[in-house]
Image 1 (cartoon, rainbow, N blue to C red):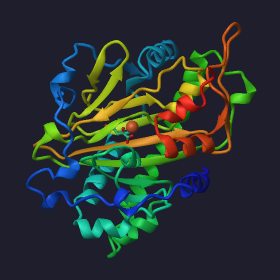
Image 2 (image 1 turned 60 degrees about the vertical axis):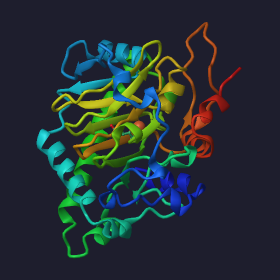
Image 3 (image 1 turned 60 degrees about the horizontal axis):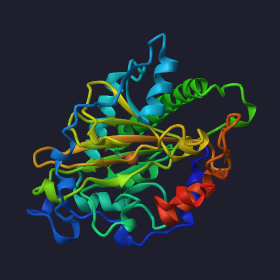
Length: 344
Ligand SMILES: O=C(O)CCC(=O)C(=O)O
Ligand SMILES: [Fe+2]
């Protein structure tokens, strides 16, 4: 795993501390101005009373390749069941994440992400692109979380956390590569040499959305697409995630017990020559529950050149770009990154 080079990609774009440090949510009785988003209809959950729901796919289904291909093309997101990740691992990872975010604020700050760093405790990387802050705190892991975990639990209580998070990443990697193969098969490109790579760049993002005194005026995560090939998300039983479907609008991704949410990121969108949408998504908060999620981002190694796969008669929608270059473009200009490599 080339986690060090993924860190390098972020080192070139240091953030200000006020774009890293979360507020102490526990100390707040109301939403401060800094976190108060404009009151718009769009922010209220009722904007998603759609009948439609994202497809649920059984990984053991004999027709899984076609089902995946169809979901990737029409939705860019699906819920996966029979994925082979033991339910007790999902439960334990969630409870270890809860243990982390339940620590006192001053303790969590000991594991703060460095300004040019990639791992540790902090707010969402998309924060500098918005006027308001999000009702969210996160913890990013690449491989072993030991260095930060030692700071969080100085009395040697970090062993289990580290073991669980490392096991979780190993299992997720196997699943991500299995999905990648099947999805490529659905694109009919499994035999093309040039889209094979060895190694990968991956990150595990633990997300925490504390219960919020005024959920209609706060936002857990602002609309964004993921800078990954694909993302595998475990969401706790509390709803909040919504995806944007072209021609339909915002649709809630209701938690399905034991299912993992898989979504297409920017890199697979480019690689598929825009056949698969890089689904736009956002997260709502609520008044009663502390919502948690764990996003596993899977991408090719940072020096891999992503070249759109063009079928005969088609034109290439994007210029080719290395993973590292694209991360850099995203860090500089967020959603304009994609249009900056578009062929006109
Ligand atoms: O919490 C969620 O449901 C989604 C998290 C997410 O979009 C992310 O970490 O990029
Ligand atoms: Fe995301």
